[in-house]
Image 1 (cartoon, rainbow, N blue to C red):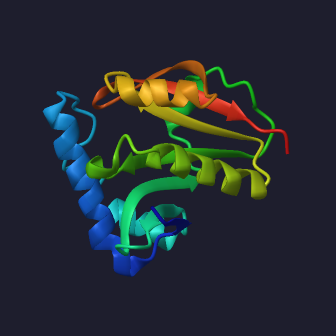
Image 2 (cartoon, rainbow, N blue to C red; image 1 turned 90 degrees about the horizontal axis):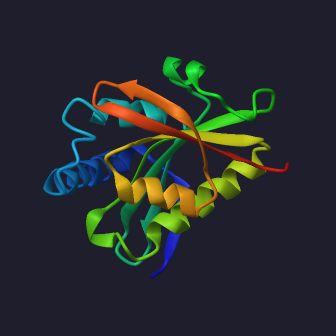
Amino acid sequence: MNYIFKLAEMNDIDKIFKIYQNVVFHLRKLNIDQWDEVYPTKEILRNDIEERSLFVVFDTLNNIPISSIVINGSQEPEYKSVNWANTKGKICVIHRFCVEPVFQRRGIGNKTLLSAEDYIMKKRYSSVRLDVFTENLSALNFYKRNGYVFRGQIVFRKGIFNCYEKIFDC
């Protein structure tokens, strides 16, 4: 499969939002109530694109986005209660990472995360933080396999989320 990791463009918003809708449906089939019609919304994604923080992996053969990830410095207020290891460096956060369900289990998630980490290191961030819904065991295992270290838990409206951190030598 030919793919490219790139900043999302506004003309792709409908295709990108469809990925999230498909992921919500897929998660519901697995009895994981992580995302819904309240979050994430098309307006949130539109803001991510305007802020140049939404990235996609594009299948260049079919000209469609197949995964999406937000990389920025925006930390939820709940993050203040987490025992982060890196408290002084340049910190970024991953949000709203997903892979189109029909492309899952093909390594797209790994390719997306590696591309995101490459971007993060080039921007000289010293660490990345993220939170993962505790009922999404697949996502929890994914981040552990990729070197993310558990730092604590926080609560959002959907329940308990584990917080993870990965530190880079920049």
